[in-house]
Image (cartoon, rainbow, N blue to C red; front, side, top):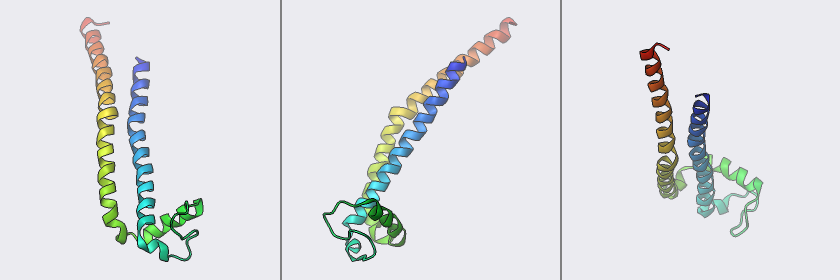
Length: 124
C-alpha cells in the first residue's frame, strides 16, 4: 500500500510540474520573440547586439527581460495570441497527464477505502 501512495505522489508531482515548466519555457520564449519583433527593440542603445538577424546572447536575453518589465504595454497585442496558444497546450496537458493521474489516485484511494471497510466489517 505504501507503494501506491508513493507512485500517486510521484504522478501528481509530475502532473503539476511538467505543464508548469512547459508554460514557463513557452512564455519566456514567446516574450523574447515578441520583443525582438517589436520596433522599440532597435531603438534601445544600452541593449547588447541591438541589430536584427543576430542571435541573441545571454546578456541580450537578460536585458530583454528587464526591458520587457519597462515596455510591457507595446507588446501586449503580440502576446495575446501567444498566450492563447499556450492555454491550448495547457488544456492538452490536462487531458494527457492530470486526468490519468487523478484516475490513478482515485483508484488508489478507493482501494484503500474498500480495504479499510472490509477490515472494519470483519474485525481484523
